[in-house]
Amino acid sequence: MANKADTIISTLITRSRKPLLDEWLARQATMAGSGAIAADGDVKEYCTRFLAELDTGLAAGEVGDIRGAGWSGMRELLEEVSRSRAGKGFTPSETASFVFSLKAPLFALVQREAGDNAARLADELQSATTLLDTLGLYTVEVFQKAREEVIARQQEEMLELSTPVVRLWEGIVAVPLIGTLDSNRTQVVMENLLQEIVSAGAQIAIIDITGVPTVDTLVAQHLLKTVSAARLMGADCIISGIRPQIAQTIVHLGVDLSVTSKASMSGALELALKRIGKAVVERKARPAAEVS
Amino acid sequence: MIVEKDETIPVRTSEDVVRVRREVRERAVALGFGLVDQTKLVTAASEIARNTLDYGGGGELRIECLRDGNRRGLRLSFSDRGPGIPDIERAMTDGYTTGGGLGLGLSGAKRLSSDFAIRSSPGQGTVVILARWK
Image 1 (cartoon, rainbow over the protein chains, first blue to last red):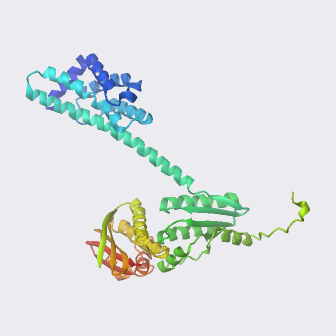
Image 2 (tube, rainbow over the protein chains, first blue to last red):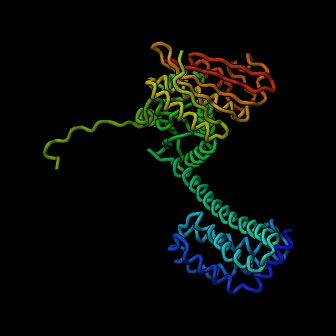
């Protein structure tokens, strides 16, 4: 069934490509929300190439499965259209309508060709609609994939951004943790911290968990691993920002957090300074004359 | 005892575990739980949700808001259709784990809850029910 109808569409596209192209372009220009589409200067070029690739694909005899080698040119074209339209801010429907808008002009031609043969007409339309649907959905798939790539990239960037290691003093580094500590993030935190301990020659690392809403056994385990790794590199860790409710919860959980810890970052900094032999002292009041 | 609200959310990915924590915290805040009670319940939920995901291969959580006279509480029922726990007593022992964790999740969650129950049989999956009253 598919093969027979297929030959007819193929013949049509070879023979009436010019009128089909004109009709298709006219249709896209009149479509709702066509402002953006009309502004797409490449639309004529895309349509011309689409029909050529359709011809190639059909000639290869693979209908219903556009993953075959005969459709590789078509897939490339659709990926190009999809990515270009996604970049220009088109919606997925506007992108897919590039393919779907071919249905009306193509079906009109097929109908004329089939004449009164109803069975044949039904066959051909079935075949053509399946093919165009598949191609249209493919543009949506590519569109979505492009979006997912953007999201994945943003997630990676956020991972980098959300775990800064800061130098508080000569020999003291700190990492403020914020949000959910899953395994991926902890890995990044640990790597960054250990790297910074080396490059700053730090003796003390402060891990601040003020911004971590829940400390369960997994988070505790991640913290303990980070502390052990830092210790192996010769740096002592202080965990700061342990709020009362977190402290009580950790005790009930039964986690032995045998690490120096402080309720606040300032407490941790004070302790760290003491360990490296420094102290913050109050300045003696200057004589009034000296104050400018 | 009256169940005032009853919802079910999936526990299938690690993002779902984050959502479990958020939903449980929201409910606890709405019921007027104090900060310590909130944190204890959320932490217990986080432990069991991760067990459901890691050991049970995913499942679901049923959250019920309870009222018993003047008391109000939250009941969380985690269920999965995973391999089950062959020896519950051993699983409830501090420090015992078949994975790479600290082995404190189940026992810790029990200590963080007012009521705790666990049902499991090999091949049938596991149900953990925990509740905390205000």
